[in-house]
Image (cartoon, rainbow over all chains, first blue to last red; front, side):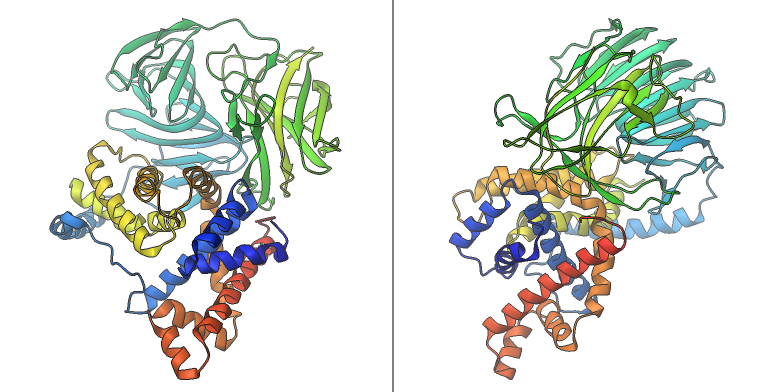
Length: 430
Length: 174
């Protein structure tokens, strides 16, 4: 629903909705227009957001509230009032506190859109090589993003993909609070009694000095140790495992899942995507014939913070070939990528992938030049088949060839326009 | 740090974002206000389990979504309630749109300045003071229906203007 004339009916219904004059027939019609139509949903959200903004901006100027019911803390109002007073005291005492410690780490290298929010501040900063960091939140916003941070003692952390981590260095050691994402740690020996602490939504780990990788999301954490030993506690039941070199453990939210330390399996030389397990970005539609498909998700790519790129709307499917407990996929000569998918109209599709070193750590990003023009058949289906040597490094500083390294993730996307990109299957084999 | 004070501080700071989300899922203002109230109470009850090193808004919105679903279940038989499936889709769409909301708010400020004096007056009446539209209708003799129709057009105009501004600023097909 991108054409303004097509928006007319939707806008009429949205106006009745926000003015609360909509009848049940119109409401049903609105529901039908919104169901499964991303553009209509986007307009709905923006329309209601605009309505809300107009309400709140007027509220800030006028004394008379438009809202029909003032919000309250229900039975907690007295508590809330007391707390408000406490907040004032707290704010004053915070202002009187001594200045925070100096930088605890700095950025060694980076690529793509990354935001840094210093603790206690609402301002988001862009990062560049050499940026000094105190405690704060690091967020990377795109599949192709990565950043390497080095603590003052030489311990390093590489973050890639869609990741969020809070970094701090406290009296009792370094703390890494991971919300989600893909991380590779190289931890130099830590002082006695001050291990590096790692916290994810499903696990905690203490590290004295080792090299390991972490993939975490809200439901599970996969920790692979390359050197040394890591002690991992599963939050779901408090059970603890020691993970030695060349072993991994997966800590999930569900207690009845396996929490066994396993030897890291041999590398895989081919891969066939299994959905929804391998999806990093995209929506799984199991009901789509014949075997379900992954619908591309819209997101904004803002380019490098310090770079000249303008924000652009992308529709992407991003897949992880080593999701779950799969062996890492090592790229070798002669491998071909085959993608079966659907689009509504002829359009350019971009394909690319990121790699990491066999023992962790970002390596490079590779993509086909200028995308590939795709002409779907009468049913909207398409097939792309590419040899690995058709992919070029995205930056001069990346190694020319990805061969011999692990594929970290693979993206298939359209730029700017939503042409209904969906992926039915992806395969890498010779 | 006083836990109650910290909760109130975070809630006060981020309440508008949570309200905005709830209002999107529950468009009837009175219902939305009730849901937001329930969310504030639920968050307080869950406060002990909140990891304060993590961002507040995603945590709060997760519970807000649960409250929205609870509200929907309660009113499932009513006709003006979205299906659970559509609410799920809107929840996902909100996640995609949330990062650019701030930019849209800034663009809206510029678009408001482009309205005619008459349009601006009607917007101020509609959003500034409850009942002002009715008074204006009685005063000017213009029917309520016509005034609301004018407001509908103004909102569409503002929405398109925000979209154009965003595109000019390089936000592509937003």
